[in-house]
Amino acid sequence: MSLLAAAIPSTSSHFSAPFLPSFHMPRKNLTAPLHRIRRPRPFTVVSSVPDPAAGPVEYTPWLIAGLGNPGNKYYGTRHNVGFEMVDRIAAEEGITMNTIQSKSLLGIGSIGEVPVLVVKPQSYMNYSGEAIGPLAAYYQVPLRHILLIYDDTSLPNGVLRLQKKGGHGRHNGLQNVIEHLDGRREFPRLSIGIGSPPGKMDPRAFLLQKFSSEERVQV
Image 1 (cartoon, rainbow, N blue to C red):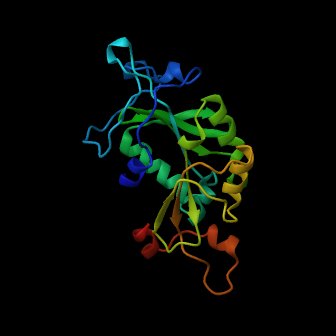
Image 2: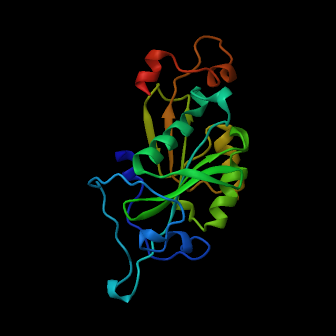
């Protein structure tokens, strides 16, 4: 989880409805039941509120979205490794993914004191932006707090790359998200290496293929 922690630095105290009702401190006001795993955190959250006695602290939310395709047919395939990472984050942080909204399966919770949405778009990979764009707008998540997680054939299998911003690198899902964020690219992304197709193998067939046992261990 250290990479995720590095992607969530200090936050400000300014965000408004409709996100505020779900994440107003204390945590007992959260709408979804959380089974939190208590452990020391490798990062510190800083509020810009000068006087803590002035009232409850409010934090800017993050939207953490893994890209993939819904359905058992695609479970465990290379193209769905973004889904797997989001599932892992939700499990580690005790966030229940039990809400359907804007063509997405999502969970509402927190990492440390920072409110987060963990999201798995259900609109299929090439139309991921149809889910993420409306969610970011509805919950008023700033562009710098949208963390996208997806597969990357330009990286060796199991290698991770965390970037503050960038292009789409011919990744159709990422490209669609950019289009639905008004062409903006200034959001962080975590790409997960899945290797490249061997020989003359069809890239689409490679993406929809399940990992070998050795590759699965690496991932």
